[in-house]
Length: 326
Image 1: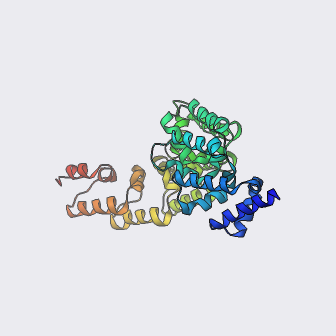
Image 2: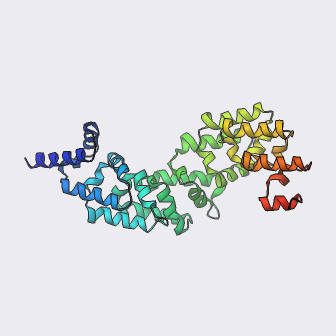
Image 3: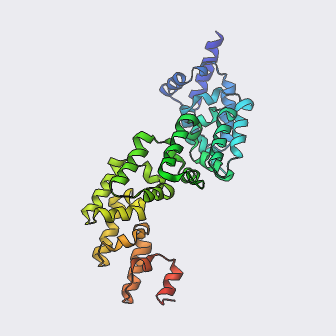
């Protein structure tokens, strides 16, 4: 009888918060402990989540993902965990945003999971200020096993020749999401693809260090199609390897929205040979309208010729000074 009364109370709580029967049943399947939760505790925890900055409209999604939150002791578990997370944040709303992204963050133990995780990253030379940023940007990190998942990622990066001067730590800070990918299914294949198109080992180290995002992309869906597009433009394999080493995002930029418009502008409007960009791969970094079109227009009006490097690799003030436009 007691159980039935409790369950009835929590059902009314969920309906009052706008959950439909299917969502409620799904949450009961995810968390058996919900059956024993008093409506008062659920209401108290709900109100606390709202008080830490999670918007009311996002709370149903947060609870649906991790209904266990409503079963946790407020002062025994939720408040201490949030207070600990607050010490990692530097900006208002960071902790609330992290909880909204990965509500299970609150269900993990500070002593058993968070503290060892912070210690692990510290051994990689990651500064204390960056530790919190990593975890709040990718809160799912707290759910990964240090012994298997994270150590495997670190060992893989070390195998690329990055185990010096705290470089691995810098890679993880630059892209905390890299730790969520499989070495065998994603990271190793991308490195092998880079090798196959002629990128040297030092080039691969440069890609991993400065643009770890590239290692996280699917070879067949993104990297290979971009490589094929560059080939179709007339670049030789050696030139593409040079482009990738000089500006690795060329392999993950949208062909239709980024690469194609720039190459078309280079050849058809600027009247330049595509070979010129192999001497200055950063050409693909700059905004088409704000940098390329505006500066080309100025130089054309003045009938001035220059390399892509001289034209683009400086701020507006230096550009004007360089070409006597002050």
